[in-house]
Amino acid sequence: MGGTVKPTRILSWNVNSVRRRLPHLVRVVRATAPDVLCLQETKVRDDAFPRAEFSALGYNAQAISGQPAYNGVAILAKAAFTSLGAKAWRGHDDKRHLAVRLETKDALHGVELHCFYVPSGGGLPDRTRNAKFDDKLRFMEALTRWSKRQDKTTPRLLVGDFNIAWLEHDVWNHKTARRAVGHTDLERSLFSRFMEAGGWCDLQRRSVPAPDPYYTWWSYRHPTAHAQGRGWRLDYTLANQACLPRVVDVSLYKRARGWKTPSDHAPVITDLTLG
Image (tube, rainbow, N blue to C red; front, side, top):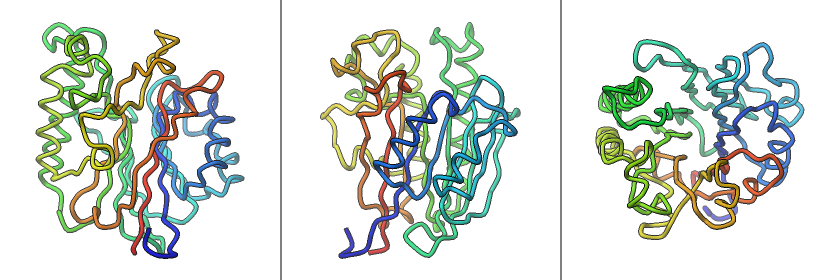
């Protein structure tokens, strides 16, 4: 833990509506004390985002990119950052990405932080018959091209909901899930190419190596899924080699998934230190 140095903490969470989940966010913030929040599926216009409520929690630095009812991402921090804006990954901006450069005097100084919400891809795993699936694949292809171009000397951290369960043990039933969007061989192959292109390190699997199960999402369609451990890993923290020496640990705040009217995702926590 770097001696007596307190780690700097980033919490990433697909909240599935920031306004509906605000009481849960307050509980999580008080329990885990993150320095930075990265939120996905905020589902709210920028002018209706609960800025004041987050300022009251100490998050005065705010980058927000949202729209009504769908998608939306936000990065909220206790210390100032430089906004790097949002990128339209395949020709249109549907509020799925934000990036900032953190300017704190701790382990986050100079880190380029990206918050992602990758398209889910609809229900049919056929890009010729399902435009949503094709859009998801094009998003990952664009992300791979971007990864190849990045300066490898800049410490860079990618967090968020990538909507792909990459490894065999990232789903509770691999044999069945291979037929479903989110775990098809094609999606997993594209994810592998993306990981290789950026030299990304899968911090969760560095902490909990396969074949141990690791899940961050449990379907609403199956009310007992969380209790029975029938989940998928859709949420990630990925670091490039320049950022890796700062990483202390990655953990999952699973209990939030068991609360009343929860998000279907659990928060992912990443701790960093300069040592």
